[in-house]
Amino acid sequence: MELSSWISIAAVCATGAASPGPSLAVVVKNTVSGGRTQGVLTGLGHGIGVGMYAFGAVVGVSALVASKPALGRGIEVVGALYLLWMGIQTLRHAGQGEIDGAGSGRPGMQGFSEGFMVAFLNPKIAVFFLALLGSFLPVEAGALERAGVAALAMCIDASWYMFAAVMLAGSGAAAWMRRNGVWVDRGLAALLVAVAAWLLIGA
Image 1 (spheres, rainbow, N blue to C red):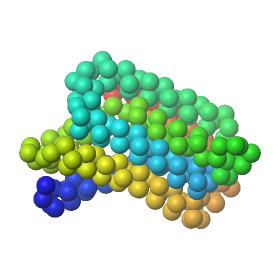
Image 2 (cartoon, rainbow, N blue to C red):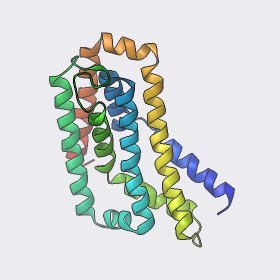
Image 3 (tube, rainbow, N blue to C red):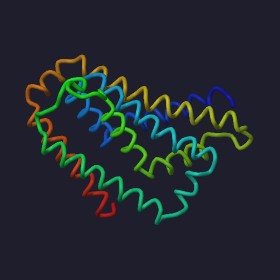
Image 4 (cartoon, one colour):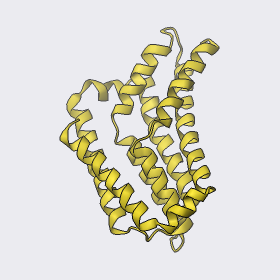
């Protein structure tokens, strides 16, 4: 593969990762409620979830998801219900977040699992990577190069959300959000519930 192909793929992956949506909301929620460690682990979990679809596109699993509308829709509905559950839990415990998992024997693991599940339960990521490979990956690309593309996509996604968590945790915005935790949590809960409703309606 030529360098220009790698750069194009990296640029598209970075643009996709940086697009605002429920994934960023989950990273923000965990960073504000659990501190930098939990936010970073949320980003790592999300990157691994994205990586599964990226590697799935390389070996053909993502093509199966994309070619079976019922399967894709089923995963999407489960994802919507998961977002709805997260929104309700956030609303119930608004303003009660603990920094860096204080009082918990597994600091940050909630963030990791939430980040992973938000990505894994989004079948549109499979379609994204199939389009990416079809548009930018040369037909003659070997298995090693395809795996390299998947690894690149996973690293870019994880790095972006981990970076966002670190920047937010170290900024005055995070401190302000913690001081106004009840209203911030309510706002994030409303966003998660709204996205879940939008997905369940069948958009």
